[in-house]
Image 1 (cartoon, rainbow, N blue to C red):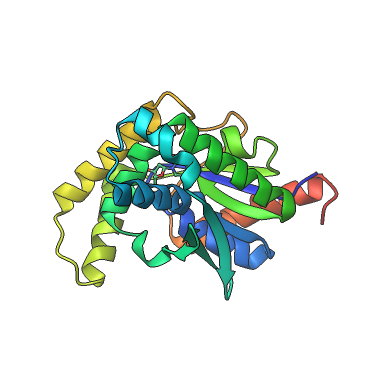
Image 2: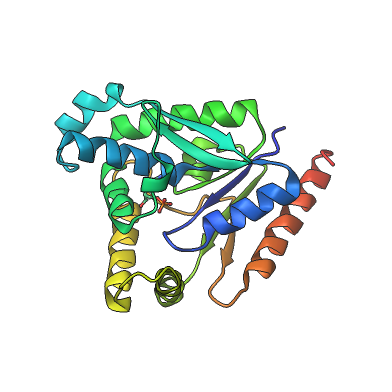
Amino acid sequence: MNRNIAIDGPAGAGKSTIAKMAAKQKGLIYVDTGAMYRAMGIFYSRLGVDPADAEAIAAHVEEADVSLDYQDGVQQVLLNGENVTSLLRTEEAGNMASVVSKHGPVRTRMVELQQKLAAEKAVVMDGRDIGTVVLPDALLKIYLTASVKVRADRRYKELQEKGEECSWKEIARDIEERDYQDMHREISPLRQAEDAVLVDTSDMGIEEVVNTVIALYEERLGRNGLQ
Ligand code: DC
């Protein structure tokens, strides 16, 4: 029996914050799969390939080597050997990732790598298809969500704190677009796995969410004699 935690949910629900904290408390490796798709987005953008062009995407997929490394416990993403971690968190990289990630060849390559990582170490993995496709046997599956308004508020505050110009309306529209794209693509759309626990964080603080996840995890460990 594995000790893995799968966390799925829409953009801006707080998956990475919660996953990182849970990983630290429980001694698990945190794997941010969105960052891997973001790196693929950068790969195609540098090549000048139209992210909607399925044929061109497939033709170049074998040339992209995405791998993960950890520095002081923080995930680093390498694209063909180059550390691209600092380029991944922009809105543009997120939107690009959302478009590129709908293509089968890209998903196959990323899923293979993600399953390999989870087979080697106990992980908390977050993304869109972790509970449904990547780790269907995860010990605990969480579907983390929040209303569009709350997610846009959080993102707006985060950007303002960084001193970046932004419009709340544009952020909310971006979130809605990305939700639609992630939930309606043909391959591995974002959806709650049947056996996932729904956690709506709209009215919850970070500590409360982490404690909820940890309590569920410990209950699963105990039930499976893994404590
Ligand atoms: O979680 P994120 O915002 O970094 O993810 C960026 C995009 O990557 C997201 O809009 C959809 C895609 N993605 C995916 O298709 N499957 C995953 N497991 C993770 C991310």
